[in-house]
Length: 143
Image (cartoon, rainbow, N blue to C red; front, side, top):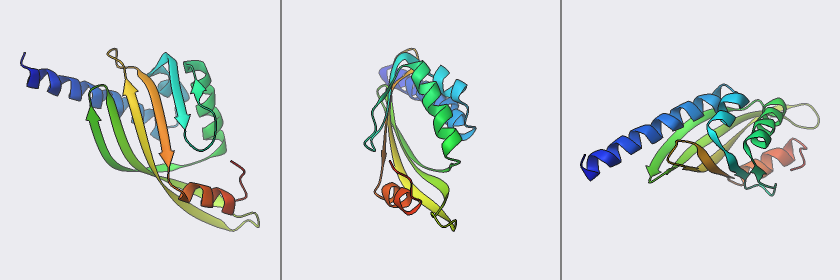
C-alpha cells in the first residue's frame, strides 16, 4: 500500500469514527459517546470548568449536560490530520431570561479531538466563543 493510500484509508476510518461520534451527540446518547472514548479519556470544555477524566465520568457528564440543556447543532467545517480532527459547529440553545421570555442562543463552537490507533477518542477539547457567556448571563445561568 502506498503512503497516499494508507493516509486515505486512515482519513476514512477517522471520518467513520467522527460520524459515529456525532450521532451520539445528535441523539444525546451518553452510552454511545462514552463507548467511543478510551478508558483514560480527557474531555475539557474550556469555559472555566475542570476537565472530565475517564470514560465513566464522561458518561455521567453527558447525562448531566443533556438533562440541563436541550441544544441542537448546525454543522460547520471538519478537518482531519494524523489521529485528530477539528470540527467547527454552532450550538443552537433555547433559553429563557429570568423573567421567562424565551430566546435562542447561537454559539460558535470548536472541537479538537485526538483519536488513538484503536479508533478511541483519547481527548476532546471544546472551545466556545464569547456568545456563550453572554447567553448564559442573559438566562441567569452561573457558569
